[in-house]
Image (cartoon, rainbow, N blue to C red; front, side, top):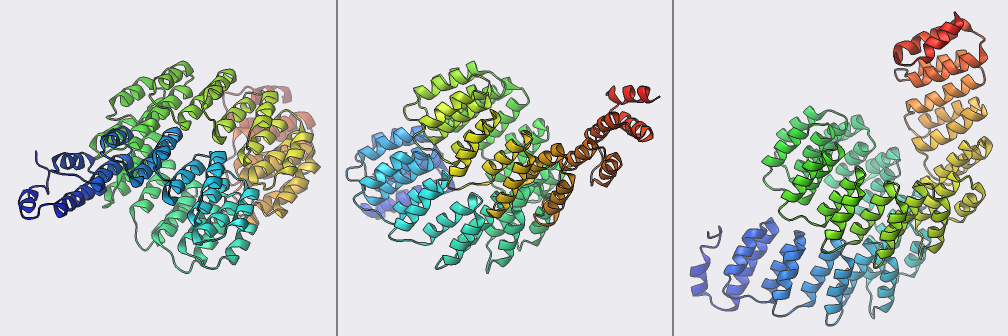
Length: 635
């Protein structure tokens, strides 16, 4: 079959022989590639009467960008000669799928490493957290440009090493707006919003990316109110700005606010529509999500994937499969959504069938299947699939380590780690987290001490591990040595002191958290309210609840009210406890009434109240015997 658009080439070739003919064919090849028509592009490539190095590069690039790395590598090996450009394309593609060693092999083939190829390698190392290798390459580069400095800066920024980031930024001889955006986002992303704002004011110029990254940073830190303020201050907004705010509200579960912003948008693009489909689906409003999907004129593969995932999340796998079968085109994400959905519902045979049916299972798909086996405890099957993989990426190794750790097999996880040719920071963190998760705190400390580089995740994990083993002194010392602390280690320390009964120390840390410019979240407030409840500091607990609502604009959960009810019950303030239950902006649940009933049995001042509480609890939780035992003892 002759592909559409090729019929005119025969007559054109007769009139225009030589170089111009090759250029014309190559342009058509590029057009097919840009459309994602890889099969048609290959048919056209095969029909070409002659090819030059640009033609070969376009076809290799088409395969590489579509994730068909085996085909790209095969075609690369057929090329009469390699250029630095085509090798750089392959470096980027291999890094994108996590094949660090294969990317290095390509880089070693570059005849003379120029700045673009070296920057591609540097960026790849930074993105895959191979920061030692990134630094070695950076130091060996005879010439660097602003992209080189920014790539290394971004790597340490993503790893949370803000001290190194600041030093690099000072040393950077030339800065552009991307460099400034990286440094601002680095501090904002890890909760240092005051420092980020100072840097923002120092910037010689701002572009819409700067504002968008600040919105993202505030949103990621859970400070949606500040993200909204930043959005309203923007001198100009793009659709991306609107999309970020809609997505931020969606991710935080604020569906109503997301809908208000969505309705204000000057136009709805596919990103905003996709975000709203996700929001509606996550709130169980799957019929509305499907209506929005059907009404959308502009749909892309991400929109289809969002709708399929929405059906899967809401237990409608048959509808997910129907939409899957009707899709004009699928990508690996589409397959992975269904594989994961079947695995999570225990339908491993269906997940395996889908995996085996994939036209070209790629690394992501196989890693998804490994995780699927791990989720249901079949680590032997995960290992069998892992061992069958022709090439392993760092993601594959890390997935296998995590699989063993999550299933209580830390020794096996360590053996996998020791087989890795070159563990990266994610591998070390998986091992560290695994030992901590399984209660092997001494082993976790050994891993931590052996790490060649420790990022914020590693230090935070170690702090949590030390707190869990009641070694508060060492945890505190490590916490105080952290150059930059985000919300997670602060919350871990507050929780550790709270559960240890050291309410004053927990409250002191919570105040220090706020003074450090860190925005607390619902978990932080849970930790401090636990401390107040157990220590009987109920006035402070109620102050914190008001602070939570008025100053931080955080909606309290049922759990927060229940902790105050429990605390009031502990000190015998039963009437106040019951008033708090009735004042809750939720339908009271058995947990709150159970806590109040327990307090009533201890203090026994008001038998009529205890009887009423028991009767209410019996209605809320008919299966529980506790209220009936209490009623029989009251008489």
